[in-house]
Image (cartoon, rainbow, N blue to C red):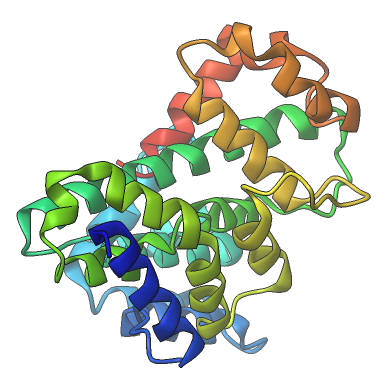
Amino acid sequence: MSTANALRTILIEKLKNDSLVLPTLPRIAIKVRDTVSDPDSNLNQISALISQDAALSARMIRIANTAHFSRAVKVENLQAAVTRIGMRQIKNIVMALAMEQLFVSDNEFIAQYLAKSWQQSTDVAAYAMALFSVYKRENKHTPILVDTLTLTALLHNIGVLPILTEADGYPDVFAEPEFLEQAINDLNSHIGVAIVKAWNFSDDMIESVKYYANDSHNTAEVSYLDFVRLAVLCQKNEDNIAGCAEKLAPFIKKGLVSGIEDIADDRFYEELAASKATFE
C-alpha cells in the first residue's frame, strides 16, 4: 500500500470509528462565546475575560485600530477596543485568534504546512469580507452578517488540522508532497464537518465547510456558502482575476457581484487590504 493510501485509509477508519482526535478550541474562546451568547452579558464582562490573556488583549487593541474598524481617534486600552469592535464581532475575532493557536507544530514540516494553511484561510476570510462589502452596497438588508461570514470563511479549511497531525506518523508524505495533498483533497471537508459540529457551530458554517469545494450543491438564495466559494476562487486566482470570467459567471448571475470590475478596482483592493490587516 502506498504512503498516500495508507494515510488516507487510516484517516477514513478513524472517522468511521469516531476515534480521530479532533482539535479543541482554547478555553478563552469558549468562555467568550458563551458569555456573548448570554443575553444578560455586556462589554465590560467581555473585556474582563479577554484581559486575562495579555497577548489576546494586545491583538484586540491592534485590530480595533486597523482600517476596518478605525475612526479618527486611536484606541489605547482594551475597554475602548472592545467597545469599538462591538459584541458580535468580538466573539468571532476571538475565535479567529484562538484558531490561529491551533495551527502550530513542533514538527518543522507540519509547521510549514500549517502556516501555509492558516495564511490561505485568513486570505480567504479577507476576500470574503471585501466581497461582502461590494455586495452590501446594493443589498443593504441582506440577512448575511459580516462577522459570521468571516468566521465561516476561516473555518472552510479547518479539516487539514487532524490530517497533518496524523501525517506526523508518516514522514514519507513530506518527501512527496502530492501524497499529502491527495489526502487533504479527499478528506478535508469530511473531517472539517466533524470539527465544526464538535465545536457547535451553526448549520450555515457546516454547510460551507461541507460543500465549498463541491459545486453540485447550491442554495436558492445568496448564502454564506456562495461568498466562501467566491472568496476561495479569488484567492486562488488573485494574480489573474481578469482571466476568471467564465468561473465568475455563476456568481454574477446570482448577484454577488455585478461583474469583474467589482473585484478589480482600487476600491475593492482597499477593502481587501483593510480586511487582511485584521489578521496580521
